[in-house]
Length: 124
Image (tube, rainbow, N blue to C red; front, side, top):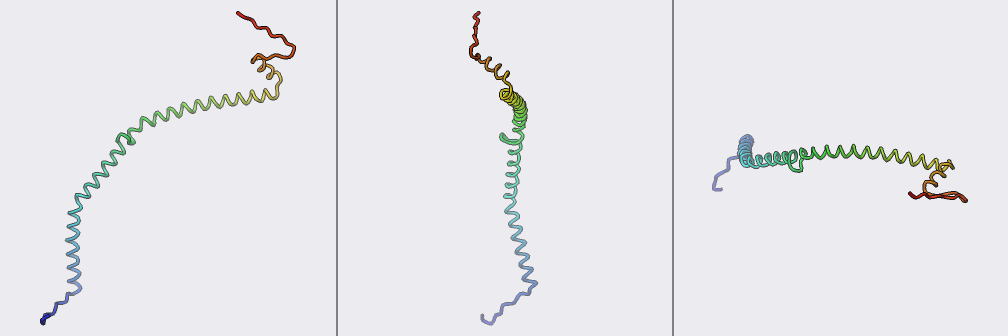
């Protein structure tokens, strides 16, 4: 303050200094983050390879998928057979409700008889 005045900087000089300092900082950041970027990219590659080809990855599940498809086909055939049995059971139910001869045939297959009938059992 002893008679010295600070020289004022122009807007161009301030912008130039800011640009230079910003450029040096960005270069420092780029150089510093290069190993970090390499580490991140390598981690991403390793992770994607482990998902794709690892022990629990997608490629190892291909055999499981074919086994599941085979079991699905097997279950579909079982389902078709059970649906046939259900249809036969419903048909028998309708016959038992409406047809007296069917009722008598089923009862006789279980060893039942009418009142007054004599049942003979033959032993071999």
